[in-house]
Amino acid sequence: MSLFINQLINGIHVGSIYALIALGYTMVYGIIRLINFAHGDILMVGAYTVVVAIGTLGLSPLAAILISIVICALFGILIEKVAYKPLRNSPKISSLITAIGVSMLLQNLALLIFTPTPKPYPVPLSVAPLNLGDIQISFITILTFGVSIVIMMALQTFVTTSKAGKSMRAVSEDMKAALLMGINTDNTITLTFAIGCTLAGIGSALFCLAYPSVSPTMGSLPGVKAFIAAVLGGIGVIPGAMLGGFLLGIAESFTKAYISSQLSDAVVYGILIIVLLFKPSGLLGKSVREKV
Amino acid sequence: MLKVVDLEVYYGAIKALKGISFHVNKGEIVTLIGANGAGKTTTLNSISALVPIKSGSVSFMDIDLKTLPAYQRIYKGIAHVPEGRRVFARMSVKENLEMGAYCRKDKASLNRDAQRVYEHFPRLKERRNQLAGTLSGGEQQMLAIGRALMSSPTLIMMDEPSMGLAPILVSEIFHIIQDINKQGTTVLLVEQNATMALSVADRGYVLETGNVVIEGTAKELSNNPEIKKAYLGTA
Image (cartoon, rainbow over all chains, first blue to last red; front, top):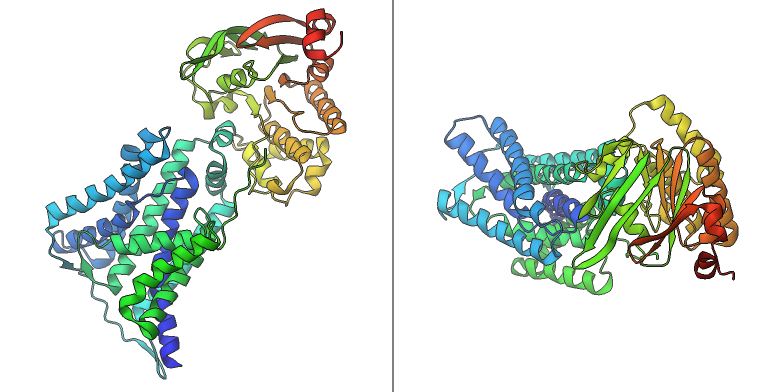
């Protein structure tokens, strides 16, 4: 029983990180129907920013992490402006290929600047874990879960009640109709990238606290898994990304504990295939029916 | 108020508008009628800058709109009820109306306008918390018009408001168009239903394959034998 609960806690821990990253995928997809393959690499950008900020500039860990989140948001805005905006009216496949290109560019730039040797994440967190009988909850788990939940609730409130959030939903439903309402859709898209990458920046810090090794390709795997989480929950649907993230994290953690740790990735991809076969729109996704 | 001169629009190599000119005076209801593919929707879309203009000009209240981006046109007082309604299906009726008022800042007159919309369309008030996608076609059309009215426009452009509606709803919608006009909003109406359009309009233009072929008062057009034959279905 305690194994079960400990694994559930582990799953929720990693799941909340997937959920944070998945939100960025799903928001960007929702608004411009683009899978931003470079999104996972924002994690790496955030991690190296912390490495430089602490190692080279000598900042405090908290300041370094806050700066890294801002840098992630700026990278998101920059990538959108330079790589995706010029292709707004091109076929979807062009932006998709560009997204892969941006991902490779970021990874190779990091290789060039930081070399392939992994660097340790320089934020030590030594707080005693919480012991409840056989069940142990680490401080990082509590922090990760707490931060994710607060952010998700804030995001949900933002998109359902604020004017900017509502206009974001309007743009994601119908960009031309949104233009007719007087919404500056370019600004809305920029804001979406900024928010998505801010969440990735926060996800980066939480991810690195759990897995403190920084390398140029570190963003790929969590990026792919968060993408799967977004598809699992229903891409374009914000609560779907959260649900998908948690489910994926828990599934992964249980596979590692009860089946085989080597099979955990296979199970994750298997879940994706099964969902796509039986409910292509995802768990919370609405099947699109065009009304003529 | 609205002046369109020698407007040319291309879709790729296809010339959709071949230099059309028309104008709308303050307080009028002007209708553009014509068959499918005549260029009616393209005309409205180019006034809203949803499609780029190749040559010619669009001016509104004596200001050339050439450099004004699409999203800023509603701030000048031009509202557009697009073809096919295009309400935000996954947003509530109330949120759709809020989006219509996106360009507004004055809260007090905003509430007054919301009341006005609900007076025009009591059904929308009943369903204000429902998702727009769950409304019937007629209700969606009412919402699309209500949404445009929320910007308190000087000119409202409507693209085929009668499309796909039951005849009883069509006359209801046209009554509302007349009401809106009486309350001081100028109307540019694009319609395939020429009979209905000419019955409410002051003047009209007949479009054929990207050209204005006939223009005149609604009365002249209704009595024109060619139009009777081609568009009104009466000999």
